Structure formats: structure tokens, C-alpha cells
Length: 331
Image (cartoon, rainbow, N blue to C red; front, top):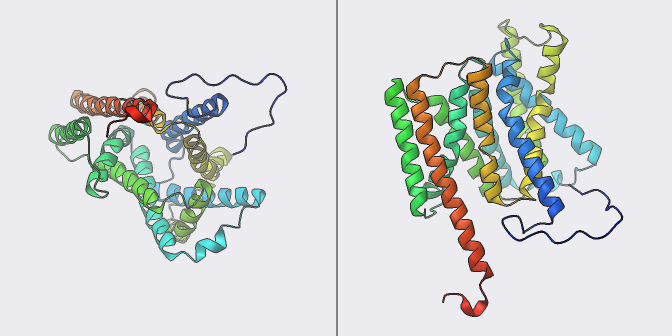
């Protein structure tokens, strides 16, 4: 994204030192606003997808894929941004990685929508609370990363929470774990792909990969007499169509925010989404949360506090080390 034209007047003073001193003040402010917008919009998704009922999860998924693809194509056409397509076609490994990412995000979208439309939004919220812990664990298993002590503590507490919820609830929290692992694996796949594609480019290709499946899904749902599109008034139809914008907009906001603010800031902001989802579930959608589930959520929150403290401590150490004169650096 490009910033607007500079306004006349004196030059702004330098940003104060601290956690945000890596970017100009204006860019950091915009990045923070965009980050809050992205995670805030994701946090409102339970209300949005609940409003799409009686459409089922498969129909909603298909509409989401196809309308997102159309939105991305329109954006690219308006921006005349197509020069990246031809080089991409000559990179089969990158295309394969994008295809894997597409499958993972499709699994995530399907399970999430199914959870919301079946009255299990709190399970979805738990999945996104667990996601940072799963991401850290995958870093060890897949990337061979070495964890710090507090990271090990956080992962251990998170595993304890999952075990507690399984025992207390009499069943494994499949929805939460599927969401946590599918999104963590999606992020890992995107990391492996690298910064080869802009966010809108990647989303376009992913939805192109999924589009044939979406079309077949709609045909099957229609053949079974279950297609709800156009049956429940203009508002319901419009919400299904708008699901493309609703999907793409927070992702593009996130991509823009990630370029402007430190990763540790994003790590703190990300908890807005599951908190809002849980509040939506309990306060607005009327989901019942028994005492043992609150205890399980509480254990997860302890793990996330430990993980957050570790991140802040690590950033502080890095900044202090970077501020040392060369002669004072340990050898």
C-alpha cells in the first residue's frame, strides 16, 4: 500500500524509542489500526456466519471460495496487477505449495463455519486460543527450532488444557484441535513458500485451486434440494455474495499491518479474535459454557500469558543486545 500525499507544514519529530521505534510514527499507527481491524473483523465472523443460516457449511464454504475469487480478480483487474501470473506458472514447486495451503485453509474454513452454524462457536474460539501454542510446537517438530524454557512451559500447559477438556467433557475437542492444527499448518506452509506472493496474489491462486471443488459442491447441494441461495430474501442472498469481501478484507488488512508493525505487536493483537469469538458465543449466540470448560479455557489462557511474557522478554533482550556498542558485545 502507498501512503497518501504528505501534508504541508513542519516535518514530524522522530518517533520515541521503544517497541515501536522501528518504523515512522505514521506507518506504525496505520499498521496498528489495520491490525486491530483485521483481528476485529475475524472476531465478528461468528455473527456473520450465524446470519447465513439455514445455508449449510458446505454451501457457505462454496460461496465463500467463489465470491472471494471474484473479489480478488476484480481487485487485480482494477490495479492492472497481472504481471506475476506468467512467472508463477513456471514454478511448479511454488504452485504445489499453494495447492497444499489451499487444502488446509479449506479444511479450516469448513470446520469453522460448521462449528458456528451448529452452535459450537466456543469450540472455534478455543481452537484459535490454542493456535499459537500449536504453531510453536510445529516449529520444533517440523522446522527443528529450539524452544526457550518458557515456551516449553507454555506448550506443556496447553497440552494439559487439551487433556483436561477431553477428560472433563468426555470427548477429545476435535473441532478446536482441527482448527488449531489446520491454521498452524497453513501458516507453516505459507512460511515454507516464503514471501514469493503478495497476500492478494496468494489468496487468488488458493481460491482458483478450490474453485472447481466449490462449483461441484454447489451442484451436489442443489441436486439434493438443499441449496439456500436466493430463497431467503435479498439480505440473506447479499450476505452470501458479500462473503468474498468479508473473507478477503481482513486478510489484506493483516498483510498491510504485518509490513508496518513488529511481530510481537501482532502476537499481542491476535488474541482479540478468539476473545471476541468467545464473547459472541456466550453473550450473543446463547451458547452454554459449563464450569469445566471455563476451567479448561483458563488453563489455556495461563499458557498464552506465559508465551506472551516469553516473547516480550526475548524482544527486550534482542533490543538490548542490538543497542550494545560493538566492543561491548559478548564474544
